[in-house]
Image (cartoon, rainbow, N blue to C red):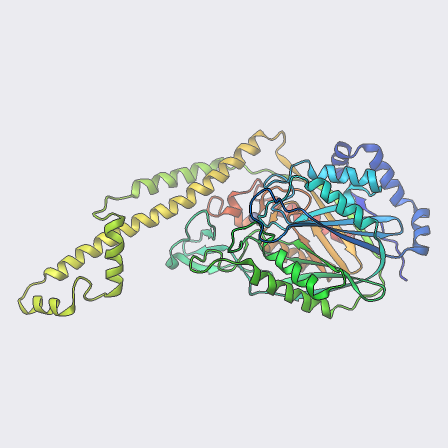
Amino acid sequence: MSACASVRPRFSHRYFWGECEHRFGAVSLLLTIATFWDPAAIAARNAIAQLRAGVATVDITDREAGPVNDPLYVKALVLECGGAHAVLVTVDAVAVGQIGTIPNDYLDNVRTRVKRQLGIAPAGVMINASHCHGVVCPEIEDRTVRAIARAAADLVPVTVGVGHGHENRIMENRRLKLNDGREADVRHAYSLPPDEEVAEVGPVDPEIGVLRLDRQDGRPLAVVYNFACHPIQGVPSGGNTADMTGFASRVIQDNLGQGAVALFLQGCGGDINPVMYKDVHHPRDAEPLGNLLGLSTLAAVREIETREDNRLAVRGVTIELPRADWAPRIIALEARQKRLLDSLRGTHLNLKSFVPLYVKYQVSGKYPSYDSHRYLLDEARGRDDFSRLDAANRRNIEQYIRNIHTMERMTRINTNLALLRKHQRQNLAAPQRTIDVELLALRVGDFVLTTFPGELTVRIGLRIKESSPHEHTFVAGYTNGYIYYAPTTEQLQNAGGAQEDSDCLLAPHWQQIYEDKVAELLRGL
Ligand SMILES: [Zn+2]
């Protein structure tokens, strides 16, 4: 059995201190640090330490909120080695506070209660929201604590393994690079730009990060899988749903059987959508997408050979990220909005006359207004009445379409401008020009995870994985809080053009500050 030397939640005092003093009390943090850093205590643990794990699932579906398509869950994985703990919680919810129905004090309350009931250090508790848009019940806090308590009461020795799955059929990068260099995104809130303006699509991350924990007799206890995609496809019934990741977890659990629990960790899915997100010809259905994700995860799970490994470490830091000043961008967008408004021209047509006319001119490019012989008859008489009518109609159609495209552009600007104004108000009302953001890094055997409380876009996850010193590094956004979207510095040059760069509190230079700190966290893990 290998040494358990890294079993110690560690925190950067400089940053984490203020948070802990506020949240948990200075004394408890001091005791926590003293306990984890006591060399004698660590040495004693090394002699006997064995990694143990427990897992539990509790239903959190709000059954008062309307029809239910499939249940939502909170799942807890408690890991313990030599008296030190890490708790990984996943919730089928849009976010941990701020948006959706989970209250802002949820994380602090859960941590405080877990500390009181189970003696587990607050910063060792991480809660990831799948970002599905299902409705959770008002008792979410109680049920989360219950799940953690049940998991903690059920610890068994485990073996550990890590794997990588692959899935690229179910998602797309929702930001579209346009010919003019701007970017637009695929949303229900507004229409897509015309096809001829779209130049290219962005990357996805097809990797599924998998942590497998087996009981000592080889039966699987838990599978933690990390993947980047908004689970927002919905279901044909329109009922409450955990969406594609709920279906994926069910596929994994049904196939593994024996009580194994699959916990989904949302990754850097800020700009990743399900494919066919705007389909209007077929009922949109998360289930087949989730089934594909579940099967791809299972393929990776089956490749993993677990072994005894008692390396368990949690490291936390709270950093300050700069808030944006969106005022110049808001002024520029308002000017653009005015220019577009002024560009609307009077049209001969209205919707009622435009639609049939447009269809007619699409069906027959050469003879739209009548059968061809009528045109030939005109020609024989030396007249061009129909051709002149067609030319006038085509001009009117084009003018009407120009107005429609201007209107579509304005819907995008109006929606994104509203987001920028909202976050400008929030930033102006904030007592500081920075936002405190809690980052965690977790090691379980060879599995390394770092977390962020917001919607990281996929390039950031790809960069962190690429530059990590650890082979099996994964990134979970949507964890331990929610500060809206966190796109790259480059994407923020497009502010006002797409949701990720408009639904954002952060100044463009936040990315380097964050990535430097993550690198430091990962190096120290
Ligand atoms: Zn989102």
